[in-house]
Image 1 (spheres, rainbow, N blue to C red):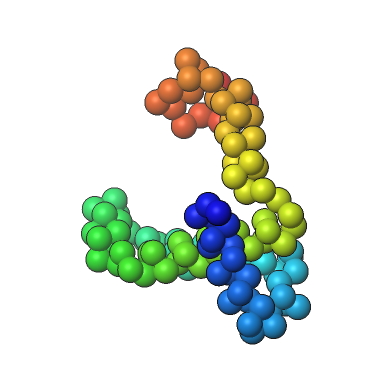
Image 2 (cartoon, rainbow, N blue to C red; image 1 turned 30 degrees about the horizontal axis):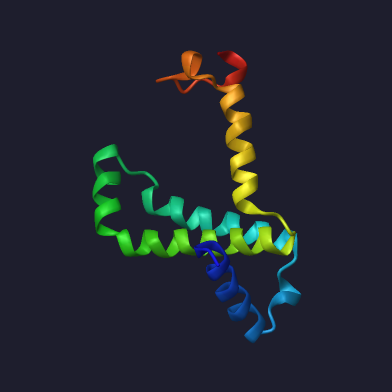
Length: 115
């Protein structure tokens, strides 16, 4: 059993011990991911680049917790929808490699439609 499957098992156990599957429909899970991502963004809101670096050091535990919340909801949503997240990521990376060829995209933040 790999690390992702072990984490999924723990997420399922945590959810099921509390009878929360009834609340974990795709819309609410996607909403929860968005809310947790906003909480992560709030840590860096209105900060200069130097302040962002300092916040990343000073608020590391808080950042880890927000990343864990986002990841747990993401993993569970994928699991609930029977989506293999690793395969989905690999597939998306392949598509992005086509959209953003190294020779055109290297060192640029330009959207693929403008390369």
